Structure formats: structure tokens, C-alpha cells
Length: 122
Image 1 (cartoon, rainbow, N blue to C red):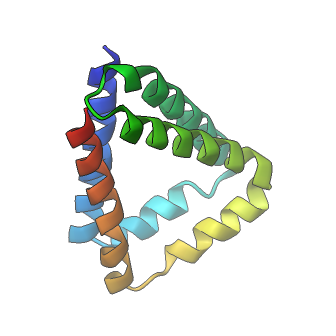
Image 2: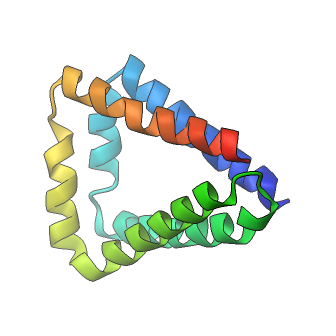
């Protein structure tokens, strides 16, 4: 069951990256969506859950270290969303709202590679 969840998360990350590559304006909408206080907190909780899922599933994956690292990154990101507070988190998100299309496309490669790496490691 956990492997299915990890595979779905990996696929979602990959699809989001492709989506931003094809339509960079969606990144602006995505960033704006997460700027609200309640959504930031929900995002923090979601990252904590993802981190726990990755860490629990790591032992069942063929390249566990990749899944462990992704789990730790997700946990740290979730914790940081709470530690930084809403104003600092919003300021970081605001930097992404109006990036030029070329910059968004360049950074879209990161979730594409991350999702692909996760799919391979499962």
C-alpha cells in the first residue's frame, strides 16, 4: 500500500513539473494558491505526511536511500513552513509568482527529475 502511495506521489511530482514546463503561468497560480495562511499550514502538514510515508516505504523500495532522502527533505520542508512563520513563507512564495516563463521552465526540470528519480527508486 505504501509503495502505491509513493508511486502516486512521484507521478504527481512528475506531472506538476511537466505542467509547469508546458504552461509556466500555472506556476504563478500555484504559488499564489499557497500564499494564504491556512493553505501554508495545510502545506506544512501535507509535507510532514509525505515525509512519513516516504520514510515508512523506504525499506520496501529498490533504492531506499533515495526515498529516505526525499522523506527527510519533505519533513524538513514541512517543519520549516511552521518555523518560518507565514510572513517569511509568503515572501519566499511571492518570489515565484512573477518569474519569467523561461525561468519557470528551467526550474520545471527539478520536479520532472525528482519525480523520475522517485519512480526509478521504487
